[in-house]
Length: 215
Ligand code: 13P
Image (tube, rainbow, N blue to C red; front, side, top):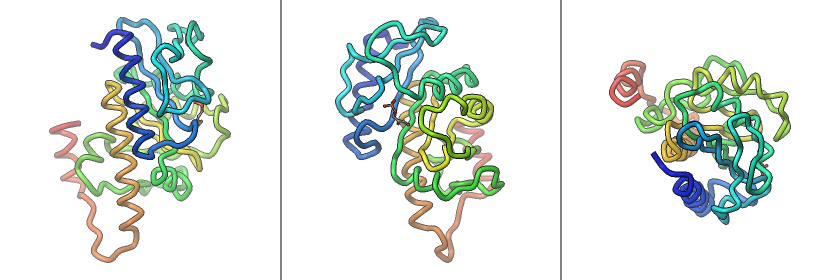
């Protein structure tokens, strides 16, 4: 398990990589990670560029989600609280406005039984899982979405927020970032291949096999 200072460094390192690869632009996106031994949560500050985070300025929140040190936390505190509250096994949450996953957020219809991204590749299934709920649009930072996000997160590692972007959790910070990257790549493939004749997704048996082996 990482120490607090290792976790601060890891958040900054992942932020740099995500920004460097164009998975977030400007001050979009935010990351949270549980501190070891139930010590609260670290979170990226509001209006921070994920490419230029500083370990000493990362926001620290206590176990009641009160801001205790560092810069003012992300306006999406409630979103991270909803996911971490519903997923005790999750250690971290990543929210991005990555282009292709966000494009799917603009196309997918909340409640549609068809998956917003088909299971095209094994790593998408292994990292993101079977379920990818789509939530209706709400203004960034609107705490009214907390109950809906909490409910959807109970059965899914990742969610798509209508016209906004993906929210992805993982057991560790690495897991959450890797799942967010797989989700972005899967969204890109889905858009590239959309409507092409002969497109083949993994079938139910193949998805079950992946989740049994790696889920
Ligand atoms: P913050 O700068 O407050 O983290 O908000 C960025 C964002 O991605 C909003 O959805």
